[in-house]
Amino acid sequence: FKNYDSNLQILNDHDQKIADFKVNIADSPRKRSYGLMNLDYMPPNHAMLFEFEQEKIISMWMKNTKISLDMIFFDQNFKINYI
Image (cartoon, rainbow, N blue to C red; front, side):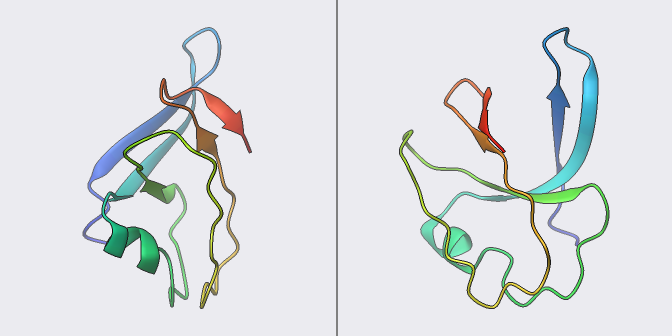
């Protein structure tokens, strides 16, 4: 997990930290396509952040994803739209 070198903090409406993650940013079509395939384990408080150039409705393909996932969708202002 050496590529998980960015930090993501989730704040509530009062700017209090409620979660903190080490993230790997999937910011290219290739990285987004591969995603979390073939991982047998994800350490606690680690995540993959899928970054897109424009805001749009997306669908996620879960091929060869062996671990359970929670998904959080953010808008262009980094406000949570959906969990």
